[in-house]
Image (tube, rainbow, N blue to C red; front, side, top):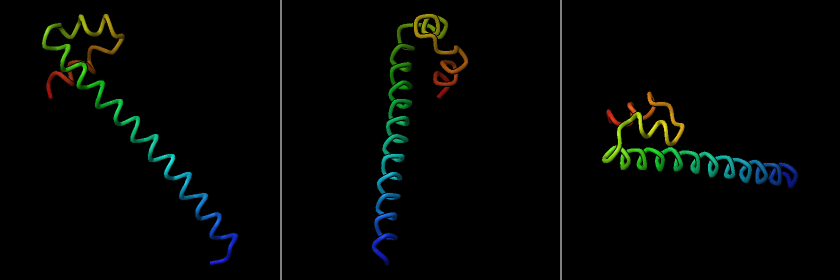
Length: 66
């Protein structure tokens, strides 16, 4: 592999790694959000959670059904 090709490949790997890390953080946030909503559902209604968090009630109800 030529030096130029190798450096371009390493640059691509680094960018792809950053993309996957960002994607992982987003997934982690989604999972965390779901866990928080599940905890809130133990003491609040879907409507109350929606009003306090500005999360659509349909999304909360989907989580409640899981």
